[in-house]
Length: 227
Image (cartoon, helix red, strand yellow):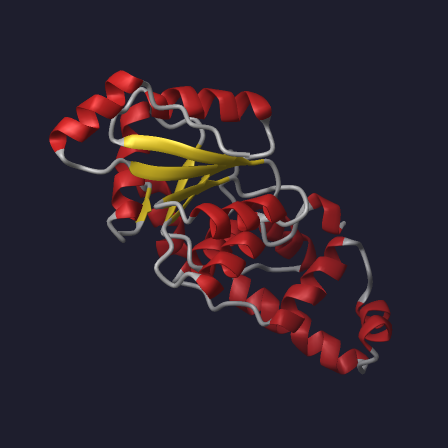
């Protein structure tokens, strides 16, 4: 669904300046937010909303169809989540400019989506000028993240990343499984699972399983639905 929101007066202003507006695709499953962001962007003559997507699959489909300059993408979407959408689009469009606009600020999700190729990450409660600055930055190919998120990344760089197996073990710890039960799930020896647990405790710099799960939840490494 394509939604043209620029007024004739704003089009005239852009035309007179000789600068083509930044074409923006908005992907968010909340109607009220889409209406609000469309209205906000329409107040800036240098922006043009060319389409709206209500789930991850539609975001990918419309990106291929419309080839926008910037995609404003919610992190948690039906069908496909933000990370999957970013990966799919970046695979086909190496020069894509994607700005995550979300209510969530968990470290793991931020890390994953920026690693996948998104250029920016901003929270929905940001001010008008901050959003506009973020859009212009990612459109210019520059990374844009808030100072709070930058501090999270600095903190993360002090710790080693968990392996995929250690992440799986941590999620099972969150479900209350013992090392012996985890060994049965993965068909591993109990001693191997013990090594994985000890390794993730060391990397997360925590004292025990309970603290590891608590840390994982606070940083988004473990989600409530994993428990």
